[in-house]
Image (cartoon, rainbow, N blue to C red; front, side):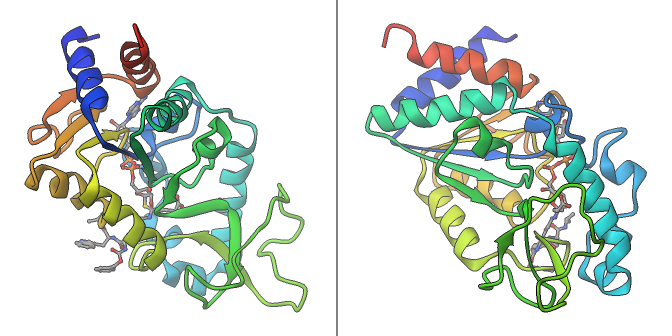
Length: 255
Ligand code: BJW
């Protein structure tokens, strides 16, 4: 591990007033949840257009639901890893030290909440929630559906109306409340950690650049190189489950 990068990151976090943590699928990889674009990732095995678009759902809701039912079963038994726990610990540390801390995640797997993170914007929804098909992301029909595996596929509500996963598919807009909150945090923060994301999906991919443009610090943690790597203030080739606990231990030492 590059101890210099860890020390510099810890120093930036200690000096920050508002920290934003932007996470992607890589943060859950060490828990055993597959990523999307890595080798053997979900998009390597499955065709995105037949699964993660509203058109795909309209054509065959049962097929799309079977895929989500399978993913729900995979996520049900996994646990947050040291990366998730370090993020939750950092939030507590930040609050105890008069700083703001906002977690913006593209992940739908709920593992950040299970680890104890509180101030979370889930950009792409949550795999344990559903809403009526044909409604928008802020509809009053949004509710939890924890049954796993599903008895009925596709699931319906008590009135027999079709339910859909409360996730954001390609071509769909994000919840205005969620994206506005996340963008506001990105504009307000002085340090952003970008962890475990290829940073290719919009609108979240622009957030690190908003921070850089206004002179803030962007720290990337990813074992692979991304399009952001050469622009980030610090970019370390590390796994999040290893680097984040190390950074947390640095910021809290001699505290
Ligand atoms: C580790 C690790 C370890 C491994 N430790 N790291 C320009 C402007 C605006 C929009 C667009 C635009 N161009 C195109 C668009 C539209 C589109 C888009 O962005 N397309 C791009 C692909 C080009 N965006 C949308 O459609 C969005 N809606 C929108 O913008 O509405 C307005 C609009 C619509 C249409 C046109 C114009 C405007 C919605 C995007 C929804 C994305 N949905 C998904 C599926 C969610 C539900 C589900 O899970 O089933 O979200 S797709 C998928 O990608 C999922 C993820 O959240 C998202 C991001 O993936 P992520 O997290 O980065 O994962 P990977 O696999 O790519 O990367 C993992 C990384 O981890 C790698 O880098 C590894 O190295 C690393 N890693 N192990 C740390 N141990």
